Length: 474
Image 1 (cartoon, rainbow, N blue to C red):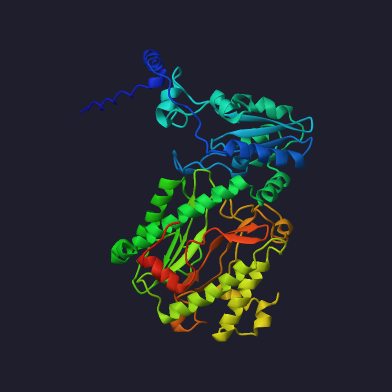
Image 2: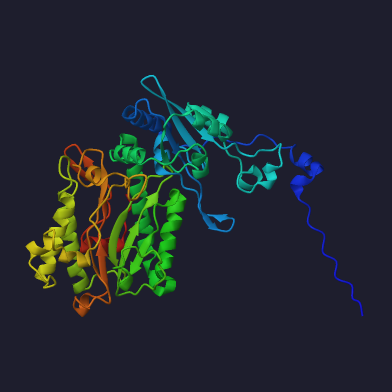
């Protein structure tokens, strides 16, 4: 017996292939507001930054790309965040953009290449989900950016020809690798190191952006500590992480890095970003959080609170030792001092404290020596880093120019000693297992010392307990 096969349903029409529909979608649209959104002062700051870079590479063409959003899954992307070197030189948060600096006289001419948006008039306006304005919303084009930035801005269609005319350029940032390869180009470690070294010294505009980021972060600490009772009642670590991340997205771009909320046995895990545990009333709660403002500068601040509002005697013992180490580190920050001074100052306090508790298998001098470092079992990370557009700023610098450099006015760095006693660490007594404490501040090196930008947050145990009862925003 013959049975007829079911008829396949007709394929849905491809709208971009229907001329009447393309014609319909090309008309009837008023001009949209495509004014570039720039942070006040960003254009002048970027121009000054380009001059600094130009002076260090006279006669050499320079190429810096903004990058693209990474794929999350299939055709879903993570939010785009421009390359920090590109941002420092342009202030422009645009995907697939490339800055080309061509030698001219004693300096360089700047040309910024940007992808033109797909506006009404072509089928990409409604068919291209990545750049079609019907999908992505109105965005500035080359003419809009040219007026805002005061430099030459062109469509990326001309980028290939421009790269082909350059002679042995230095490349940095995140330009498209295929485009580079087509012209025999590759990223340059030399240019990346130059930019990292330049970005170590913040100008006045950058310092104000960092102050803003820290102030917004302190406000976020107030929002989070107010929610600790909800977290204890069942919301857990993720409730607190979500509280801060919502605050960061409200006042800025979002968190400057994955927010760390570690309660109890999770607090000793340095990068506990999973944040999927409960918050118990008798546990310590380590909060490592930073707001990235709309200028893309970020804070990086840590405090450790007693979830129930009061430190137990053993929690207080650990916190007090970390506090002493922290204050020693802060005191060692100042112009003309080796960058590693605050590291050594904090580590010495930690080592002597651990020795007092009987936790060092060798003498303090042996532990602090180059062939010892036994105290680092409980403090495996360093004591601080540069801070700026990246939470771990200037990371592409050399060891000599980073750790081997003396501190100078305009540097912004973190000081962050801690003690991390993991719940399964049998080298410590049971009462210490599962306790993790970190204190981290953001510090500006000044001409005559330092300025703790995050000083609105208390350091001592009593101060933190008072803060939990009545948090004070800056």
